[in-house]
Length: 67
Image (cartoon, rainbow, N blue to C red; front, top):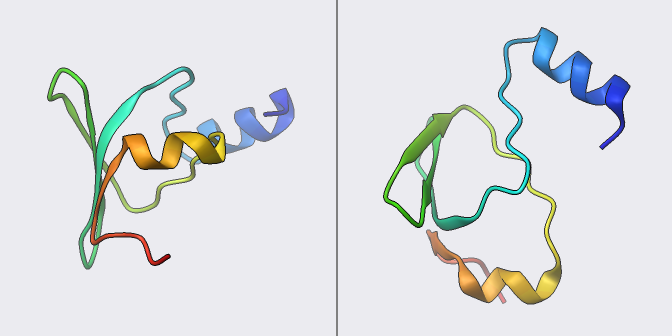
């Protein structure tokens, strides 16, 4: 991620987590919940992820992703 883009995102109040390993991602009607391997939760209005395609099967998505 470019430094400029990261700063712009932070200036709008967002949180950026790098090297964060999500175990579960839950999409509800008005929010997203990300759960890590320790059970810690992060909630937000949006979720932007960047990950290798081979990692998708390691995360439990609710609702399930379409194939």
